[in-house]
Image (cartoon, rainbow, N blue to C red):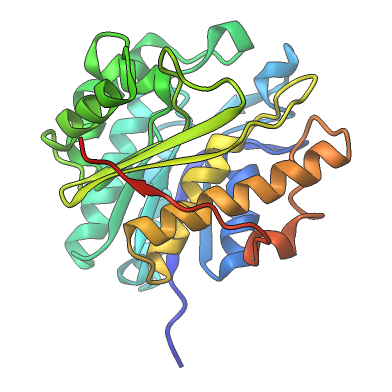
Length: 290
C-alpha cells in the first residue's frame, strides 16, 4: 500500500469560519494527506470582519513543538512544510529553523511559502517586519512560492504591466531559490474582467490558467490559503507541477460555486468536500511562449 504523505501546516487558525489552517487543513486531508496543524495565531474569526479576539503564538513555541515531534521519532516522516499568515518576523525565523531541521532528517521534504503580506483595504493587516522577512529571507529558502499579484509586485519592487511582465517577475523569483512560483491571482492591466487568472512558472516553462470570476457581495476569505494547501497536497500525492496546478484551480472553483449557491461569506468547504476531490469541471493550463 502506498504511504500516505504527511504535511506540517504552520499558519493562522480561526475558531469561526475559514482562513489559514481553517481553510486549508480539511481540504488537504480530504484529498488524502495527513496534516499536522501548527497555528501561528488563534483568532475568533478572520480579521476582515473588522473585529476579533485571540492571540499570537509565542515564536519559541514553534521550535518547541517541532522538537516534541522529533522526540517521538516522527519528524523524519514529514514530507512537506506549508507556511502562511505570520504574526511576527520572529515566527517566520522559527519556521525556517523548523524547515531546516526537517530537511536535515528528510532531504526530500518540500517547503511551500504562502507569503501573506496583507490587504489593508480589505482589513487584512500584516506587520511591516513580516513583509520584510518574506522578501528578504523566506523566498531564498522556499521550494515553492505562492504569491498573489500584490505580493508578486512587492517581491519585484514594482507593479506588473502585462501578463508577460508577470512571467518575467516570477522567473526572477526563481533565481532567488524556489523551484516553482504559483501566482494565485493575477491582476495585471488589460486582463479580462470576467476571468480569474493564475500563473505557474518553473524552470521547465510557464503556464497560464483562466476560470470564471464568480460574483459575491463580499469576496470570501481563505481562497489563497485553500489554493496553496491543495497545490502542495497534490504535489505530495504525485502530481507534476501542471497537473497539481490544474487540479487546484478546478477544486477551488468547485468550492466557490458551492459558496456562491449558499450566498455565504465563509467558504462552504464541508458542503463541497466531494467536489474538492472530484471536480466536475477541469480547467486546462495553457503553456506560454514567453
